[in-house]
Length: 175
Image (cartoon, rainbow, N blue to C red; front, side, top):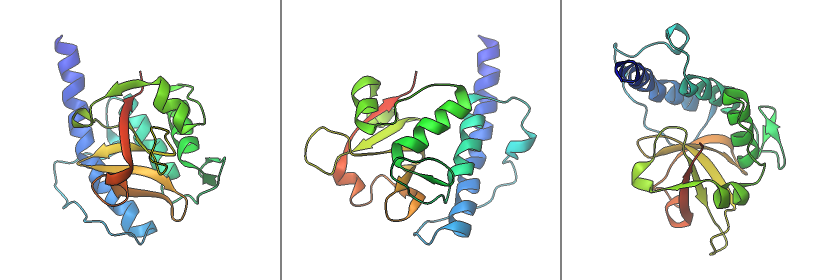
């Protein structure tokens, strides 16, 4: 029990720096609107973290994809679509095989309430007024998620922004 608490505390500390990394990526690679998180000295450098966790691996994979161009059917930092990026991140970070299909992931994964979103959870959208997932992303923190936009490539967006708020159909957790 105590070991779990130590790991959770270290993960919480590591998660503190993620907004800084993402804001730096956004400011250097993307012209979308984003409010950067102010720097705080207690943030840790990911590369100096003592314990390599699944979250650390996922963060490193996201950094590889951030700013990548959109490519339908793609799953690499040279070009990717939304489900291809998620599939590759989980494969490379945790050796978890996911389908290259947003709707299949939406229909087969563990459903979670949007109030319970945590880093790495998957969020799904539908542009066709049905419960068929046509787009997806990975939840980061504080309402932000990373996804492969067909017009802007891999970017960070806010769940409450249009059209995402209107098109949101649910969240899932990778087990």
